[in-house]
Amino acid sequence: MPPEAFSGTYSFSSDIFSLGVLMWEMETGNTNPGPSGQDNQDVTAVINWRKNGGIPIIKEDGILVHIIKQCLQYDPQRRPSAVQCVEFLSQLQQHIPSYKN
Image (cartoon, rainbow, N blue to C red; front, side, top):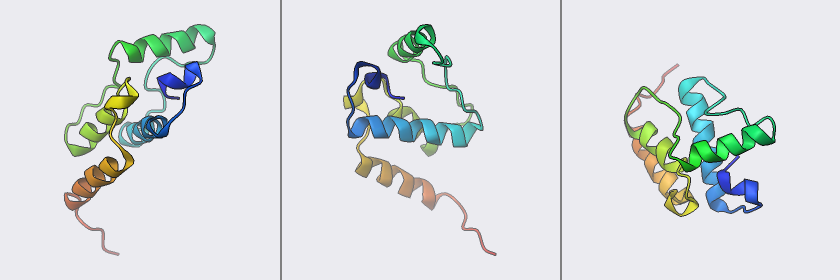
């Protein structure tokens, strides 16, 4: 859940944050990028963790990691647009060998 959602604010940038979480989960195989958020205390911990620059740890580097980090920006204004995400992912696709059956 994007940080701004805890205050009841949703936008296209919220969806971009969610895309970043999804890509992070796919890249790392992990489903918990920070504190669990299971109760009010944990929700506050998640907000503070993200607000203070907490970006999930990704050991690899490259285009995908760059996209993930951009999508997970705490400030919704700093997240890329959907069009920019498509452009980034298109660049990434060019570096992946095609799979042939």
